[in-house]
Image (tube, rainbow, N blue to C red):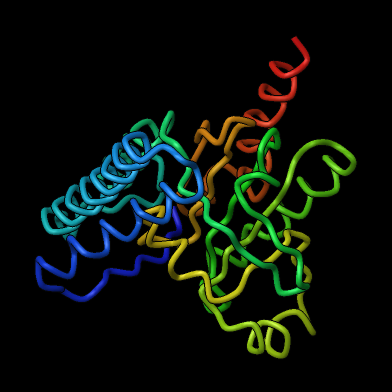
Length: 238
């Protein structure tokens, strides 16, 4: 499994509490339900902290001679895979802390404009190799769901000018891209890249995954998102 992990520097407790408070405040202003936002933000934070604590324990306890030629037979791989699966189940059902944002092409979105839409959110950055590896699969999603009530947003931590000059001149990413999205990454408690969420018409996270599992093929992100999107579209017509 390919994942780019960003571990933030140790901060003082007052600063950590301040960041959590600001995330809840932004969520409350956007979604209008402070208790629901507080619970979702706290849960997302707990999910992320548990993931990285367990991941660290697995890597620290890894024996140097236990790696297999086949990843699916590697005990460390299996433990990590279970850890990421536990995170996925943890974040499902939580309210997505989406704030107002503007794409690099000038399109503006907020809670009102996202209401009733399925939203696929991908957190990435240019120098993240696993992020770039899954872009063809994500582009396939955009092509398939053209004209349907599905919005694809790529939140990048890169600056807009860097994206335009160093990435999009030579690469294609069909998601609507938002630059300098560190605050949104913090709201979602994202510390590993890429991280993707499928959010339903009510703003609730229904599917999520971290990284690219190469053992399942290059189109694994496409199939994983497609299953969730199709289910939400069918449910909406009933």
